[in-house]
Image 1 (cartoon, rainbow, N blue to C red):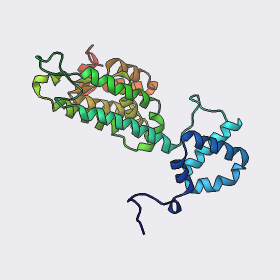
Image 2 (cartoon, helix red, strand yellow):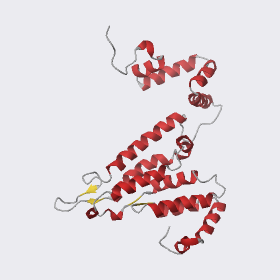
Image 3 (spheres, rainbow, N blue to C red):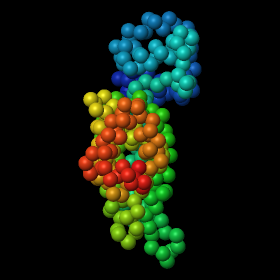
Image 4 (cartoon, rainbow, N blue to C red):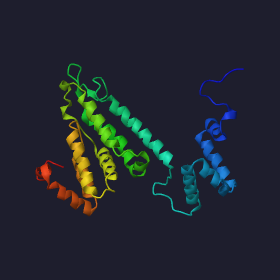
Length: 262
């Protein structure tokens, strides 16, 4: 008897749903579901959906309610399950990581050489632009994904990796200028830190301490000044007052009066 290839499943060992996803296009699967949901009393499947995947069941229930007009749809016109949100989020991070892994390579994308007789140099502006393009997609889902990821230090770790990789360039490449993140990436970093702080007893103090930590630890990567100011200005009034009080204490006092300090 012939054996199948390792990792492959026979039709008898696979669920019908998995077989269909391998046998039909996404358009065909969409048409199939249209026919099934139009012809059947979908309520009869409710318990089965919940048993198979509560996240899926909740999403399907919401989509059906929107389609019937029972509840209004979201402004974006799309509903996504938690798993679908995480799938999208992880795909964005794969792109982000691919870019960051290239930083530090003397022959990589961000080691620019204007002429063959000139020495290459690190292009922090190009790095910031590429990361900001990805961050533009992250901004729209960051609130919904924070509790799913469960990693309050996610963006601090990301900045640490950028800082470390830039530092690995040889000194003659001019890496001392580092990289200033764009507006979208800055907004993502600050929003993530705020989500990790806003439920604390003193959220302003906690949030400010996290931002200071980034400023103190990393010398090769920084946040956009204008976007940082805009973010702080939009925080709740009570939080803003708490933060301003912190500015007047300890070693940070002199930075409060420094016009070049964000």
